[in-house]
Amino acid sequence: MSHERHASSATVLVAEEDNMFVDILQEAPLSVHRQRRSIFGSVMYCLLLASYAVVAAAAPWIFVLIPKLIPTLLCSSNVILLIVTGIFQQYLVYQVRKVRLQGYYTFSQKLKNIARLPFATVAYGTALMVLVLVWQPYMRILSVSTLLRIVMFVEVICAGCFMSMYIGCIHQYNSLNGQPDVLKSLYSALQPSSSLEELRYHDGGRLSDQQMALLQYQRENLHFLSEEVLRLQECLSKYQRSDDGSTPQVDLAHLLASRDQELRALSAEMNQVHLELRLARSLIAERDTEIQRIRVTNNEYVEENERLRAILGEWSARAAKLERALEAERLSNMELQKSIAKLRNKPAGPSAEDHQA
Image (cartoon, rainbow, N blue to C red; front, side):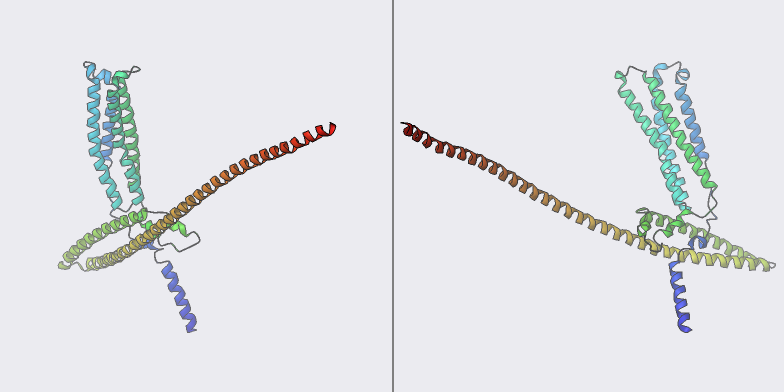
């Protein structure tokens, strides 16, 4: 009986070790202090783009008194738009960093890719306008002002589409009601081994980034919980000084204890994440070493193949020389046989004539 108990306890311990991090998504604290991102700046920038589109479309009527200055004014306004877009991109990068610190790594990567597009679009549009001005003497199809208006209008429409995508993503982020997706990165290097072991490394170089984002998210949670503990301690001290604060003292003490326990659990989890990050980096380093070894072996095989091909080419050249020598020898033998046949026929002729005489 005791042996069976030890065996069952050992089995339970092994199962618990295998499933150590499987329930981490359920135990991890919710990001209740998640801040909503504002779309006011994005909407104002879209209105600015709309005004530029109106200027590009109606430039001949707006600048009817100064038609010769239309190209100059369009280029100047596009440069101003480029500067404003560069400043606004820093604001977008700040928003993306805040989303990343809230624990939404995948969402922040998507936003980061979209946040770069408006500035790139305006920069390409400015480059096209410079090309139009440079090639102005060789253009005969449309006027310079028309081409500049077309470039500016298309540029503003594309930037507006990208900003609409960004606003839609921010609205989707504000309506999220779930766990941060950065917690899923804990599964990448901790899956139990199986026949499809290569799938454990599907993240590649993103694993370290995800683990770093997870550490930043846990640090933000620790900061928030520390502030919450300090606030509750102040409230508890106020209620302790009051005379009729018996019931609130019990509630606040229980809440403070739960917050303190949650803070300790979060600190332990953060330490564990540090260990897992080192483990993931060691696994990536081992894979890199193995890849380098395979590359060296492949280079050796390539060199050996080239050497064998050189030897094969040399032997082919020798075989061709031997074939040519054999052919020359065969031709010489045939000539010798013909000469021998002629020599044999010459003595036979005079002897026959002597016999007739």
